[in-house]
Amino acid sequence: MPPMIYLDYQATTPLAPEAREAMQRWLEGPGEGDGFANPSSTHKGGRAAAAAVEVARDQVAALLPKGGRVFFTSGATEALNWALLRGAEVMPGGVAGLSIEHAASLQCLERLHATVLPVDGEGVARRPDAELIPENGIVATMLVNNEVGTIQPVAEYAAAAHAKNSLLLCDAVQGYGRVPIPESADLIAVSAHKIHGPKGIGALWVKDGIDLPPLMFGGAQEQGMRSGTVSPALCAGFGAAAALAAERLDEDAAHVERLWSLARDMLPEWTINGAVDARYHGNLNIRREGVNGLRLMSDARNVALSLGSACGSGSGKVSHVLRAMGVSEADARASIRLGWGRYTSEQELRDGLTAIKDAARLQGVN
Image 1 (tube, rainbow, N blue to C red):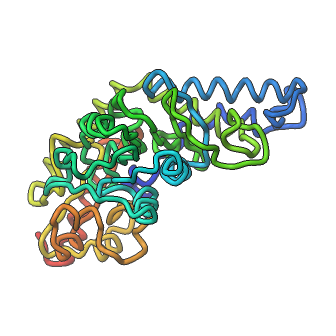
Image 2 (image 1 turned 90 degrees about the horizontal axis):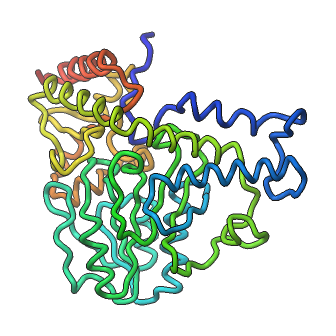
């Protein structure tokens, strides 16, 4: 069996060796240093663990706007739920959000009976319509779409929200560490495992002056906002991954662009779903007439790719993102998503794309 070629970076990314190493001390013990200690404890081991959490907090914050606080969560899903469901309690004027938001936001928006903000055929939000923006509410606008990679006009929507005394929530999961995050956002959700950190940890950034209600009760952890024992190991891994992303920002971007060009050259017959320029080029969502995406995944079995969001890939439903863009059901079912990044070699990508083309030929598509 040939080795797996991983082209699903939007679902998750490989753990960076630096992140794994940063986590190791906080997983070991008892022994010298007592790295397993609870960061809420006041003894030496606890204080050391607490210090590690704060170092990680600063590392994560370095990739976010100034003038805000980072609260660690179990992931971006929790962060988005916190911002929307608890935020709506103090911003009661209503909620609006893009039709292409991730399910973590979308299901909250549905629960809150939110106004849907449309996108165009390129998968980019239309210019803000003041009539659709709530007064004294919350507007949810993701930075980079997880299915088609399109970059959204967050700053424009922040300005429109602020003009009506509303807050702007930005799901920055797919753009964090890769695409600049507008300074005008009020709430920002990020995740560690999308930047080569560990799964099980994310963060919500809250701009100074915003009074967001606590998420959970039972202790004073996370500045009194999220009760529960904090994991120094997960925090350290997230922090190390964020620091590495900051250090390698230009290098990683250049590598992604090389891989994008290679993929475009190898797949000229495939149609790109979504904008080409207003897009993060580590995401290639494409379709081909005559292709069945589900069967292609089965036939190209040594290639890890997807049909869209990992959260909904097993549902059998057509991508809500592609349908919001006006893509027909047939074309949506003929679409696949490829993602690459730091640890994808050019040879791996060539081999993976060759396998995909071979799988398409099995369906009679040359």
